Length: 132
Image (cartoon, rainbow, N blue to C red; front, side, top):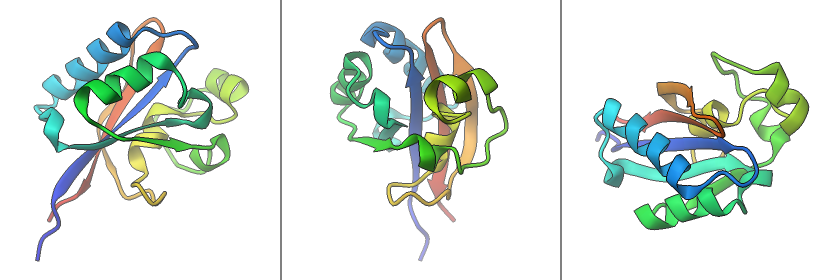
């Protein structure tokens, strides 16, 4: 029996990032990867960003739950493009990629489909989980 393929959208953002900017970057990443919004299992982010209105609005508008992770958990996930600056500020060298790679139970089961992409205040990455 094969498992369903699902996707996790990882999002990092500076404080006060707008829902319009978060949504535009998320939607463009999904479109570029030809992933329908209904195939997204959840949006994942850093614990400190879980209350950001821009992130919460984007998830709510799309009907996605939000899964939040402490920096200590995200810092344990191997990612292709870590950032020393983000590490200094957030306590983890990756937010979007690391959050996308974790499944809802916190296991790094994903395969990065969209490596991190950035706008002035937002970072997004998408990982595929399951399938086969």
